[in-house]
Image (cartoon, one colour):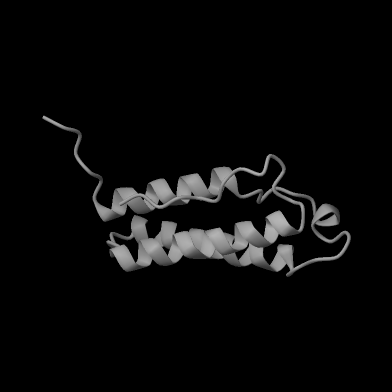
Length: 101
């Protein structure tokens, strides 16, 4: 028998974990705010971190996300990653987070 696909709760937890791995949330503020920016990296990281924390609380509370919510979070993370990449903050230039469903 083949491997089973994760339900949307498991998929959301996997997406959150992948985003936390690939997005550099731990950059010092001095590095975030140097040079010309193509968008405020610090504000984008704070926003994305807040979104992830909110979803973690919702999942812990028993909420089951739909595929649209999964897609929205992945899309947001990709947009933030692109801005960080343009601002030279992604380090290894890893590809943006990919959704799993």
